[in-house]
Image 1 (cartoon, rainbow, N blue to C red):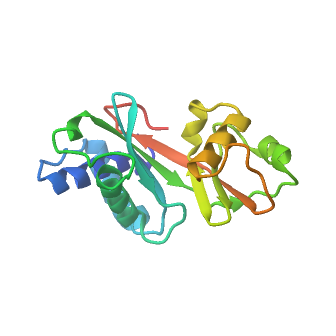
Image 2 (cartoon, rainbow, N blue to C red):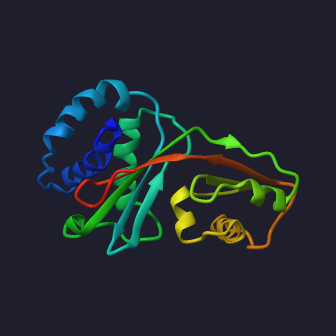
Length: 196
């Protein structure tokens, strides 16, 4: 575990454990070392992250920030609680579910506008598995993290589902469509999988 951000899933789990009044997970000696380096240098700097919760391989909650508007530490804590308790697609997570939940943290780069001539051009410019995409049209907006490419590997399917997530028809395309792309560093709990 060489990246100091690799401790983020443990910190998110500990925030949830504290919320439920459960014991916090003790970190490994490597994480303790990283935690000392992470707090002043990284967690206090502005940052944006998504917290994704899965249970038995199924999505259980996913909430995040697309742009840095507070410290990464505050964003992580707030989004961990929001993913567990306030994702409108799911009932709030319970204390008994917490041990069964796997946590992934995605730290986002700053979104960059994607210039395109038309939908075909936009689809050709997307990099599957690399780019997260923000779609905006009128007052509608939605995003998919780069990890969603695993379920929707073609750009056409990815974009159609992203439009539906935004509340638009899958075949919608108009002059009001704006796209931005971003990349992530994704981190899984050490005992749940490897850090990326």
